[in-house]
Image (cartoon, rainbow, N blue to C red; front, side, top):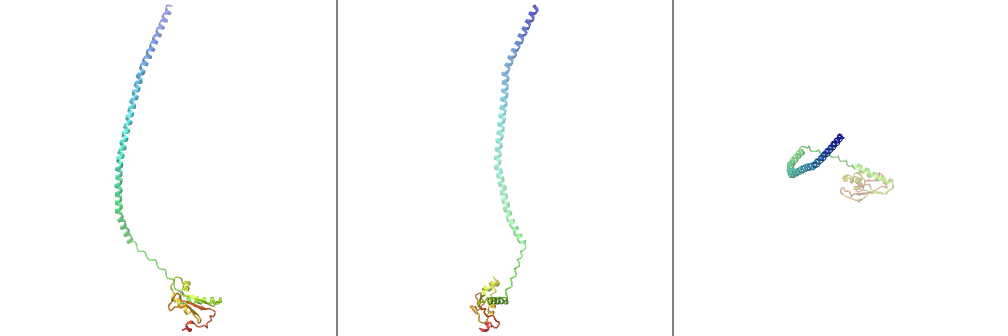
Length: 215
């Protein structure tokens, strides 16, 4: 019986001691928690402060760089203007040189040969005009026309337009006149107004020339 009591008492004392130890551990942990929290918050604050300082420094650096770029921009513009002015001066200097070169090239270039003039077409002859007048007479005779009238200017335009061959035309018209033919418009000199009426009802070879009758 005595042995059982001692065992129970020892068990109780051990239980009390363990309980006391647990309470001590809990108290120490509870006491340590606020200190740990404070340390963590301090560390977080220091990290935040360092980051904000770094941000401020980076902002300052960026602002300084912008100022430098703004300062450099006018300098670049001034440099560009000076370059442009120099280029303009160089172009002005080269312009007279180009003109001189062009003049030299013009002098050196061989003179172009004038294109050969087209040979003028030969004028109609006296006999060609007489043949045409006689053909007109016989055509009118075959159609039973009494007469035809031939104008020097119209005949020349008909056979060779744009050619001045009025002397030959007038000579052929006068030489083709026969006895009985008359002047509608007479001219002493060769003239485009000269007009003759040829009678075509009688074209026999027995008819004399107008010049022989009115010699």
